[in-house]
Length: 226
Length: 290
Image (cartoon, rainbow over all chains, first blue to last red; front, side):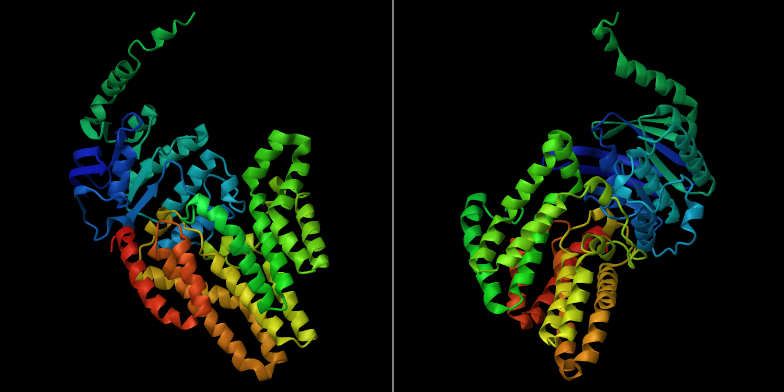
């Protein structure tokens, strides 16, 4: 269980997170949606301990970050490091012994090649593989489906479902609502650094329609397409 | 220069004087200055060989790309060429210019993507990345050791050993993203010990062939050899501690000055090591949530 109480974050005078209260339980999948700049990534960085913040984040773990796999929107990669070495680096950091890495290469990545030459989707799949092999209990996946091909999208969706069965806590942000609706138990809607709504599975369809209506409105009419 | 924390105008005014001073100092201090100078100039010019930059230039300039790159390298190397000519090192000046012309003929897009095998794959990243970037240094250093043994010049052997030491120091000059430090489930102290242990073991692996060869060939000088080796270790430890003292920021000129100061007066390391150790522990505590 992760409990967030009155979490606020300021960059200088600008408030990017405003008194957020959330709870994430074991064996559940949570979605965080919101437009660009809503504060999703900052929230994830605060939970991970990569940012200072006001408020409290507590969990059953002495150090939450040691049990947390964080998939960044754009994974950082070193030049001159192969995919295999990237995975090795992240598993070494968690003191996990890595054996038969090729057998666990579910995305068929060219692990012997430099990771910096990978496409956006491949980088994401590499980073996801690495955090899965770290054997974490909590996963924060920031835009896991971005730039990833349709086949891998299906694999990632299945992985997330499998993590749920294994009683892991998974928090996902995504702009692809259908994948969230398929996997999540609860979805939180963020706007201007605040959680403005919590939606459970039975209301997912309504939320999607409301979001479409709210976002699109009459914007497309302005184009006067003919 | 801005990267080093120096105002641009002052940097431009000072840099020619510093360059001439350091070059003269090098040629005064060692008979192998011409070798060091050419190697240094080549590593300086290699900055222009960055893959993305070259791919971009190639796409913009097409057929004129190679001429542009040769011109760039000549201009970048001009101060070194002029100083070598001033020192009457015409052969080395010629070699330098031949080398910088040759490097422009490589297809960077293909060559930079070739995965160079490294013995350090199991423990990324400093030595894995560093070895691949500076792999050419090691055959040169081992060859210099061979020459030092064949001509009976112990100092040249020590120089080749120190060249590897300096190369390994450079592996710690670039700061990694905080994500890679954050991932460690170690305390700050354990993290630093782990980084230091890996560095010292890998450095020893690289330097071992030279140590063995020199200790057999110059057995009488073994005390100097061991002293030189033992001196490399505290420098490597210091650079790691300095690096993480300023984490996640890059090292600036002030840290560079401290390192240079320690080369001039090595006993100062006795102050630097504990000082930067405690400073890096404080910095790492915030990221490792200690």
